[in-house]
Length: 151
Image (cartoon, helix red, strand yellow):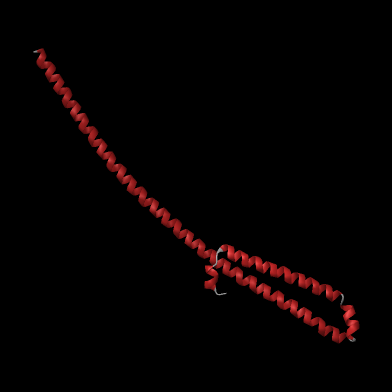
């Protein structure tokens, strides 16, 4: 599987692959245990083989197979670990970029909202000043009418 194909896999698919590798490891572990059990029973094989040299040659095949399987498993784990780290770094970079975009949008919205609020406040202040001027003018008018009536 290429790096490009691995990057397209979802987290769950990658975890499934890791679980499959773990199952394979367990199967290889059980095979190794079986081979070790057979090794303990090799005295019978030595007796059947007739010579110690023939028994040694047959045992070497078991050890070579177990070593090859273990080596293959370790290589697979290292490869998958590297791919997982790359995928995680890519996901983190993407999340950080999205977070930065969200912060930028929030700041722009905040500036816009503050500008609108400031403009609205200026309108309110202007209206309040106009109302105060009208009130003062009405008060003067009322006072002038009151003075005219007194005369």
